[in-house]
Image: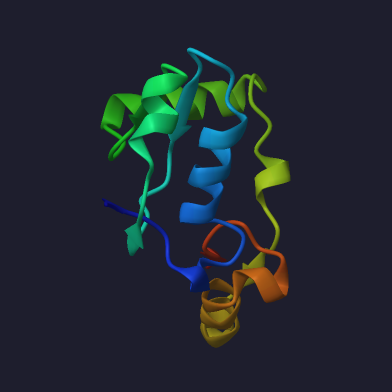
Length: 117
């Protein structure tokens, strides 16, 4: 048993990790970037028989964040496809919480962040 995403986590969660184990090539890697919450059952034979590496990145360090910022500014990675909603103003907090709590309903893949000026 491993910790994993709950069913309420919308478009992400433990189901995504399990699907990755099923489609990864032999001797491939599954890199889990998100922290997941809940209980997830894993068949260790899938990992062992296909010699799959499961890597969890853990919390980002300051160096990691600087590197990601560099990649974004230099346009080596595309950030825009990851943004599904942009809300302006603190008064949008209830809407942001609603979207974050019901990601599947709003087709949001990440928690909502509010832009406050």
